[in-house]
Image (cartoon, rainbow, N blue to C red):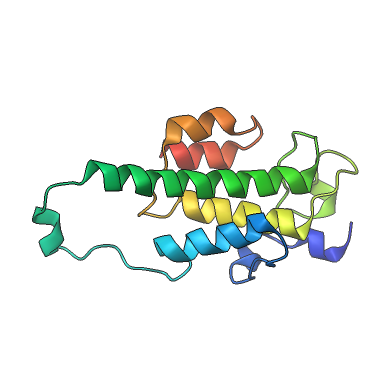
Length: 147
C-alpha cells in the first residue's frame, strides 16, 4: 500500500471529493443542497417556522435525499474496497486486517463522509433501511445509525 492509503479518516476532514464520476458529482450536489457541506446551522430555538404544521410530503422528499446520499456514499466505499468484507482501516498497515486488500484513499474519503453524515444532527436517514444494506463489518456506521 502507498502512504496515502494509510491516512487516517480524521485527517481527511477537509479533503474535497474528486469530481471524476457521476457518483461523486451527485454526492457533492446533495451535500450542498441539504447543507452538510456548507455547515448549515441547526434551527435556532424559538424558530417561527416550528409553529407551522409539518408537511409530510416535504419531509418524505428530505428523507429520500438523505437516504440517497447514504446509499451513494456506501456504494463508493464498497466500490473502492473490492469484494472483501473488511472495513477500511484507520490504522497503519501493521494493524490492518485482510492481508493485501487494497483500500484506497478515495474509499477512506467516502467512509469519512458517510460517518460525518450519519452523525450530523440534521440527518433524516431511514435507519432501518440503511442498516439492512450495511455490510456486517461496518460496526461504527451501525452504531451511528442506532444512536
